[in-house]
Amino acid sequence: SCDLSGEDLSGLDLSGLDFTGSNFQRCKLFRTSLCGCNLTECDFTSTFLAGTHLSGAILRRASLRNCRADNVFWRDLDLEGARLDNINLRGAGLERVRMRRVGLAGADLTECVLDHCRLYGAYMEGVTLTGAYLNECRFGNARLGNAECEEVRFERCTLDGADLSGADCSRTQFIQCTFVETMLSGTDLTKSDLSHASLDRARLPGARLAECRLAGASLVRADLSRACLQSADLSKTKIAQADLSRTDLRSADLSGADLQGADLSGADVVETRVDDRTQFEAAKTIGVDFGTNWLMRQRVMESSHNLTIRHFRRKHPLLGFCWWALLGYGRRPGRLLAWGIIAVLFFAVVMSSRPGSFNFGQPAPGFVDHLRNSLAVFVTLDLAVDKGVDNFGRSVMLTEMLLSYLMLGFMASLFSGIFPNTPE
Image (cartoon, rainbow, N blue to C red; front, side, top):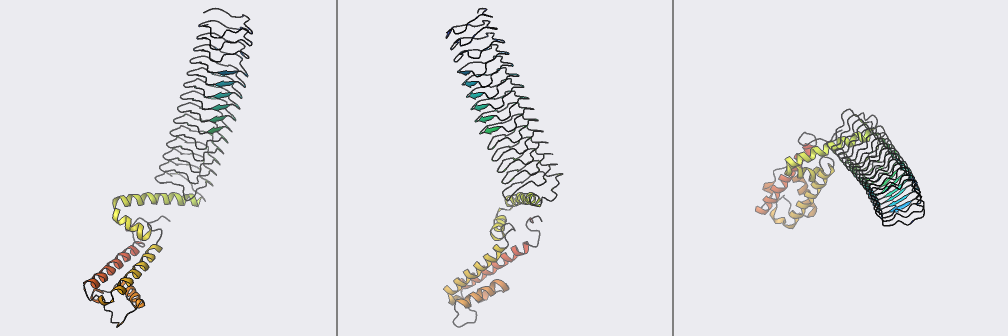
């Protein structure tokens, strides 16, 4: 190590040298090449680094506090454990930089480009990233509380376990990003694009997501209590088992969303849009005032009925199958009439195939006669076993009678409590 503080090293090529533990404070390093140098634990505090070549250098646990490094382009740096608090990196380009547990509190990265950088566990409280572009960066367990991230573009970035509490991320694009178990309490995501993002188990209490695009995103078991989702696009979003209690969902689009098991207690759903694909099975809606949102009220009740149907089918599988086949779970009573017509036609064909097995007092019955006879047996429930001349005829008559009684029973179920009723 050596003390080079205040020295003029401008224009020198010092590539590949070992300066471990050296002091470079207030050094003149304009156009100095430190590429590939070992700068572990070096002190660059308040040094002007704009124009300094550092690509490939090792700066582990180095101090770059209050440095000016705007518009630089550095690649393949190792900054693990380094302190870059309040550094000026405006317009800089950082490619494949390792920044594990780096300190970037108060740093200015306005319009900076970060490509394939690793910032696991980085401390970035109050960092400014306005207008920056970040591609395939990793922020696992990083702390970005109160960060300024307006109009930033994140592409394929991982923010799992990161803390963005109180950060301003309005009008920011998150393309194919993941936020699993990320803390976003009080974060401003107004008008941001989180389409198809993964936010499973993310914590967003009190977050501002007004007019946010969340189409196709996954928010399974996320905490969205007291969040503002006014006019947000939540179409085809998975919000199963999420906490949406006291959430502002006014004018939000929930078309095709999956809210199975979600807690909507006390949520504001004025003019919230839903469609036939929106699922509310086992959702909690205690204290929800649906007001004039009749469609959402109906979808909630239908989803509850679907859950009841599933339980009924699990408990009575055979009866449940018959209920579906003949009545469409009570939603398609016209099926019963169709099955009745099919049955009458079927038995008329059977009778016409072996007319000698039946005796209805007609000397030479045609197909129309057999059709009338089949309809008479089916509708009048007449004990017509004696109309069969032989065993085949008697068996056919008995089968048609039993089928007629069965369908009569299902018809009666429409006006009884045998099956769970569709809610009004």
